Length: 230
Figure 1 (cartoon, rainbow, N blue to C red):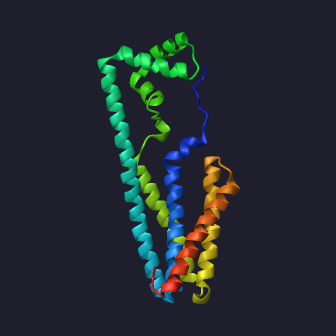
Figure 2: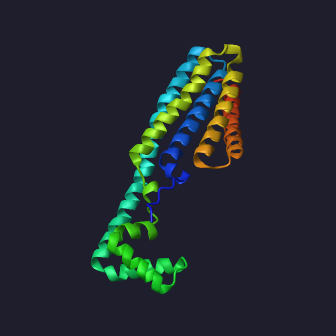
């Protein structure tokens, strides 16, 4: 028998989710901010200052938010593993029976389930319980620093593009250029994220573009309505 070396899209979930989320949020929030300020009849300087401020604040917010939320997941996983470790030390036979019960529920015969549980326990009891009882897998284990870095970097990269468009486009066509350019980018990002994750591409493109257009339209409408930076 040869080692299992097959690659799956799920292996990318640790970095794909925060990267796609960060880039999408960077494009939508920064483009919306630019459109809202521009709709309030502000000059280009005010638009760019607002955009740069949104980029910096958004990148830090994404990093902090991802770190805190994923750290909470990591803490929960660590607590669950500590509990399992203590139970394995105090009553290993009961824990082996619990593992066998899980395999019986999945369709194994009691005899085979007990044999599998015994062999996996002999190899690495904690890993077996982490995987089959707690659902903690290596590919989905919480990594707070990784999530924070990917989110911040992808947010900044996404936010930079509407800013560049706003800096280069004529002021009279700024709204159209930023809006259209951002929608194209959002659709492209949705398609790339879907392709990387093995999901339907066109559905993802349409979904991301729709919500991005809605966010930009609402912000631009508020800017025009109140005549102030949104």
